[in-house]
Image 1 (cartoon, rainbow, N blue to C red):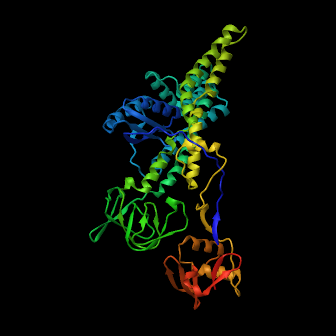
Image 2: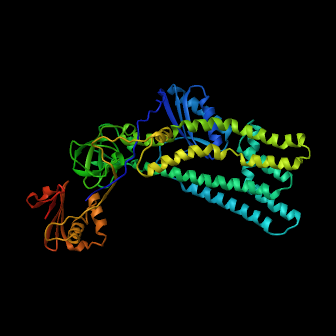
Image 3: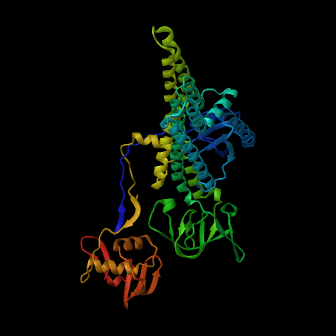
Length: 527
């Protein structure tokens, strides 16, 4: 049996421009209630203008704002100014300090999605009723207007508030102008349809973004929830942040190792795949180094902590994942800058479409060109433009994370476009991280099915990845009652008694005199 091989990709050397060194202090925030992609771009641009800010990055997909300040003492003042700037652009957005909580989605978010679905569903039903039933003018108008306000009331209110704040050119203004114009020329169905489909599109966009967020959040599962801190003869469950250098922690079988340290007592096999990518468990004993994020499989371990949680390996990986989408690709920077000028150009372009032809073209009807100007406004909404590229990068990072690949930023993902050769060192292991039985080579006097059945019964109580692969290859239910004794020989295999027969499953070191070489394979089997 062997590890199921993965697939390599060829890449040439790709050089990335070094990013400017960021000195001073950093603070991360979560923007609760942020649902506008173009608004996020405006917020980032304004935060960068705050005095004392060296660098700022706002990622709409994760709702995460990262601010680097030249001086740590300025961070509180910068935070206050950033909050004011964000409130000025989107009053409903709350700036909260990112506490690094484990990735996940609350039931409150699901409730919001249900409310949105109900609101849009009722608006759609009223709109359909006005279209299907032959009603007199006023009942029909009331249905259209109610549907319009249900679907687009929030958009209209945001547009009005932004106008009073001097922020005219955004998607709320475009959609409000286009749909009110449709009502002005008595094209009620078009006005309602545009607003309804716009809001439905925004709803599906939010679902798509949240799906990508979940894929990134799945990688946060390596974050340890607690640590078993040994205080005298007592063991207390505490947050990993509360454990200090030199403290002793206890790691029970099946638990995640919360912090980096050195084993001082106990022996066990640990699953290192979440950190190293290596699927084969590693043996640890007193004196062995152990990293946060490893999973203890079978033994009780006492570990002396050598690094605080903030400096631990798992914390650094988590920080890298969370900051991945803040490292924007050149394409993302371009589209953000382009969007600042795009909306005003669209508005003035629509004015030109509405006014120039009726003034200079003989026979051109103003109503016809006004209608075309409204269409131009609708199709030019900047939301899709602003979110398309960042969301594609975020989706790529999220898709990679689901497959255990850590991409450090959109700039690195874009660089892969120029890759044609991948170079691996000679000791590198390329696997999918999942063991699979590829061959069964029986000794003389045994069949393949017999060997597989005996191996499956021998490994039925083991949680070792190789044991799991054997049971999967066997594919039948194993009667555990037939196994009378089970003895795990640490790091080497198992010894069981099955129907009064002794079976050894594992390395040849278990019974060197019984090891039989397999001709032409370079393997040995136990007979």
